[in-house]
Amino acid sequence: MTPISGYHHLTLSTDGAQEDFDFYTKTLGLHSVKRTVLFDGVIPVYHLYYGSPNGDASTIITTFPFRKPGVYGRRGTNQSRTIMQSIPKGAADFWVDRLNERGLSAAKSTRFGATRVVFAHPCGIPHELVESDGDTREPIVNEAQGISRAHGIQGIYGASVAVMDRTAMDDFLTVALPLEKEADSDEGLVFRVPDANGVVQRVEVIVDRDSNQGTWTLAGGTIHHLALNTGDEENQMKLRAHIEGLGFTDISEQKDRNYFKSCYVRSPGGALFELAWTTPQGWARDEAPGEIGKTLVFPPWFKDREDELRAGLEEADFA
Image 1 (cartoon, rainbow, N blue to C red):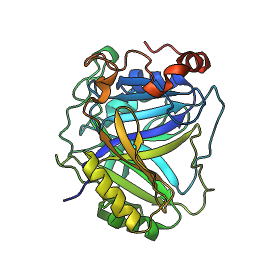
Image 2 (cartoon, rainbow, N blue to C red):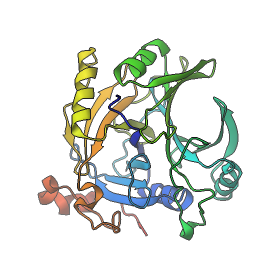
Image 3 (spheres, helix red, strand yellow):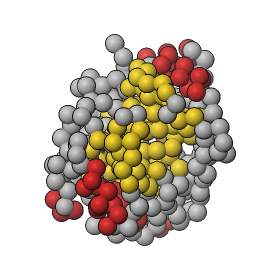
Image 4 (cartoon, helix red, strand yellow):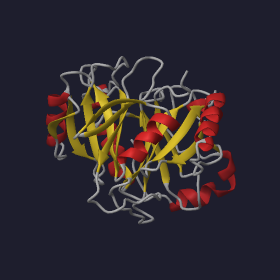
């Protein structure tokens, strides 16, 4: 039995906090799930979470807007390349029209047999909305933004990773994680992420030997990591031991993220993967259920730095 059941979240570093918030909540119709700050290091940077109203795992996109500190990276190969979310069959035309009307260039495309809406975050990170007939999750409705059940994003479909060496990445994904290899063609490789509910979620691997090496640090304009859901601590620790035992020693100890606990591993293809599970209190640890994502909250270990962090954050209207 696999210790993984679907994605937990996807995390990227973006540019301006206001454009980031407006893009995910007003354009894509996701809900604010949590507003907090970067837990690592000393730079005051928001950590913004978006997803379904209750913050269900496998719907969450998180971002670090880096405009104020001015830290930017380079998109390239040996790096996660594209954020992908599921939409209902037949919803692509709605999204092409909506995105173009809002000044975001969008077009339909097909890859690995799936119809996609291809566009980009305002900071340039590629995004795709993928029509999926293998997704039983309830679409995320946002009536205030004009998004109905017929068109709403259902959650994470996956991500694409650009690599120079497809063989090493193939071995990592199928042996270390392990995922199920579904396709191998001139378009690239497709791996199915196991999911106890049968929801289709994937990692797509694209070979790119022409681009420069992409940035691996937390830096604006790049995807930072792809988080897979282990469900609980026992599965997380078993999988961590399995990965490390294979020789993938670039793997972190468990880190407390307040709402979930995480371990990070660098794949040989460059993409950073996270093994995560939600704690029993989850998002309601510091905000009441039904009120999550409404206020700026800090972890207990930053109690003495709250005023300093607030003063250093970029101004934004999160209404």
